[in-house]
Structures are given as C-alpha cells and as structure tokens.
Image 1: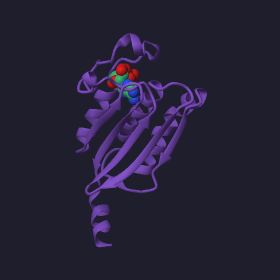
Image 2: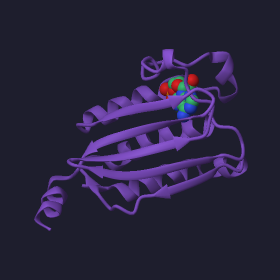
Image 3: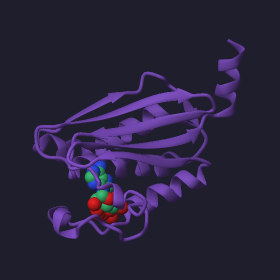
Length: 159
Ligand code: ATP
Ligand code: MG
C-alpha cells in the first residue's frame, strides 16, 4: 500500500532543482491521502516522468501543478503545465517508445522518447492508465489513474 501524497512528494523532489533554476513554480495539492496498491519506487518514477516532462516542455516563469482527485474507485493524479502543448495529430503516438513530437522542437531537452512509454507500462501493471489532454501552445495535463486501495475504498463507503 502506497500513499499518494508520498508519491507526489517523491516526484516533485526529482524536478525541484531544475524547476527552481528556471523559476518554474511546482505546486502540489494532495490533501486527499488516498492509498493505492503497488510499488512506491515505480509509481514515483512514473509520476516523476510526468513532472519532468511538464518542466522540460514549459518556458521559464510558468507553473506546474500536481492535483489528486478521487473518483469512485480511482485515484486520479494530474500534472498540469503551461508549456508548449502537443499537436492533436501526435497525441495518440506520444506513448510509443522513442516517439518524440517534432524532434527539432524538443532537441534542447535531449530526451530519448522513452519516458511516456514507461509511464504507460507502470500504469498498466498497477491496473490503471495514463491519459492526456493538451492544447498546442497553451499547455498539457497528464493524468495517472490508479485503482484506490480496497481497504481505503471500503472505509470511505462505511463512513
Ligand atoms: P525521455 O523522457 O525518454 O527523456 P522524452 O521526454 O522526449 O524523452 P517522453 O517523455 O516519452 O520522451 O515524451 C514523448 C514526447 O511527448 C516528447 O518528446 C514531447 O515531444 C512530448 N511531450 C511529453 N510531455 C509533454 C508535455 N508536458 N508538454 C509538451 N510535450 C510533451
Ligand atoms: Mg520525458
């Protein structure tokens, strides 16, 4: 059992320095202390990849927000940025291994295009999924959806 607040804290820690050096504000709203079943290291790596992308594909002096929401049996952890966004035609391909949108555009960040395929894999092995909403030039939101831990869910119903 892993508390989502821990996963959020781990993920933000990884990007803290890079974000600070570019005056990108990292905000976390994880008051709901939901728990999910799984591996803390893997879940932190998955969310960490989403936060890293949010920072990498955003201009300086912007804001990256991580929010946690519970909907029914799912915990939804969203990472929202005010970055370059993703063209609609590329949205369905970004989770493929080595796929990068317009390499010229993102060359400065020097990634390999593996991050999102790993996030997708970790979400799937935890019984969840990762979804994306994006507006080119305005920003993106990636959402990691995971089944809420059963005991927690039963507890919530009993209240
Ligand atoms: P790696 O994560 O392996 O270092 P990468 O960041 O290029 O490299 P992914 O994380 O898989 O690879 O992302 C794939 C592509 O999707 C990126 O190259 C980028 O074009 C696009 N992308 C991902 N996240 C965002 C985002 N938050 N805003 C804009 N574009 C994004
Ligand atoms: Mg990446």
